[in-house]
Length: 361
Image 1 (cartoon, rainbow, N blue to C red):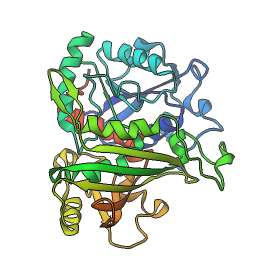
Image 2 (cartoon, one colour):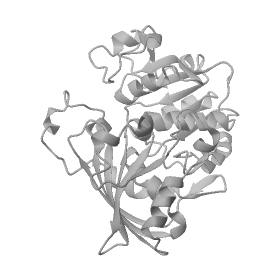
Image 3 (spheres, one colour):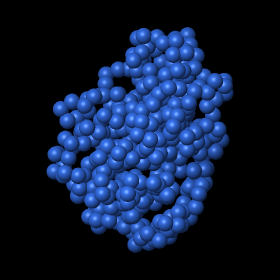
């Protein structure tokens, strides 16, 4: 690949920003060249800025300890040092939209972990194995933003990764109705048990905005590109409940589904085991070799045992059986801060690099 591309992490001191730092350490294509955060963190070394709040299981990588954190609002000072940025800021949505567009207008590609641009018509929201063709809208977006090189691409909500891949592999059987309940880890809220002790021995049956995202975002992913924008799909009908559970990492889902053309159980399992997408074809560095793994055991997948499958980038399913109301029911699991957040965004960047959308300045 030649010289590594220089990456900026905007929002680098938060939990997802820290995960980006961890994942990019020793990455074969990318290296961290700049870290930006709020004005209160700016001017300090990264090690000083995250002192007492480093949440990863591995130590702060040596390569970033002495990088001086910049003010994320000083866009051109950051973009002058990098080829593209990952964005994982904690701000109001309208502020995030404006900030990400400001970065893109400098000619800098932005791979966003935020939800602010997920419904912007010409911004692709990508699970690389499922809808890589949506990156075509980048050309229309560049025209709107007035840039030849910059753009914004986003990853979808973390909870849907536990069931959308499994359903996607079955799309030609035409799923009509989906009922999904997600049991979501506390890291999805950017927290651990130290700073959220109320979650110990507790379940909270509400996550703000999560159910709407879980019902609508899959339809955008299954949509099509038309006239320089993404038109969302109209089916299947999806209804969800999203629940916070006392787990560090890993979002588990229970799914009920009916089909227009009901497959056999053997056909479903074969589709899951055989499914490959563009990242597997391209051999991208972060791509899982086995995207969907089906467990035959009655008590799998389990969050603690299986969330790190394929370095946290694989999706697992299990307990597939016929249902008395719907055609089938099953369980899905994905790692929310790897496949569902920073890891998914890194994989998007790898796809965009491989397809020629991200290049050295």
